[in-house]
Length: 215
View 1 (cartoon, rainbow, N blue to C red):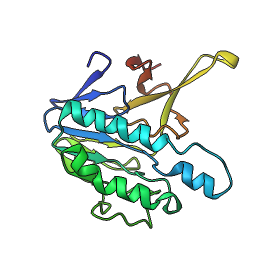
View 2 (view 1 turned 180 degrees about the horizontal axis):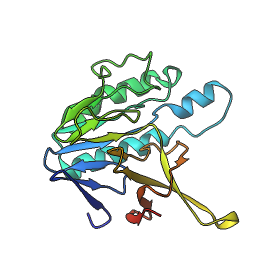
View 3 (view 1 turned 30 degrees about the vertical axis):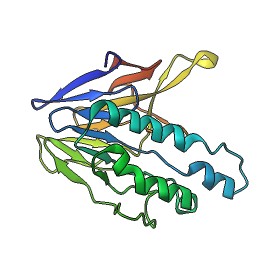
View 4 (view 1 turned 45 degrees about the vertical axis):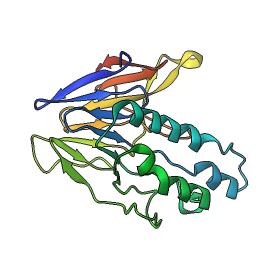
């Protein structure tokens, strides 16, 4: 896809997608983090009105990626759901049907928001290795010095400009010294945390992944 960007690590390539997911073409792995499904329902339970159609948009985007790429496996790097209170019967049904709709196994690496929730057929897994990648929810140090840690949790954004013209855009952020690639949050109803400008960054804007570099 022309809107994507590619990076190389120890002879393996990764495609940074504008849909806020990473594609490993060698292993045919689709990697994403921080969907926070059920967040609107969680807020509604506390009297904060939020539209309930956000999950549908996130899931449709995921299914669109799977239809295009035909992955052998989809791995969620934590925080598939936002909280146990938002895990409604309807959402449970959607999650149960998801592997069949994706056409491949779905693996969940447990995140802090997933704790205490049980999802039939989708038991949260600890951090794991796949090829040259160390896959985790929170940033971790890879146990092998040749591996790159792919993780979520941070919801990285890049801040451009100043004052009223300032923009906050989701981004991928590579910390080569710490051997870590931060993935943007896949979910639409998520905030973001600015990452240091000395990290190499790729902005997501207008369905494009744009290399910003480090400063």
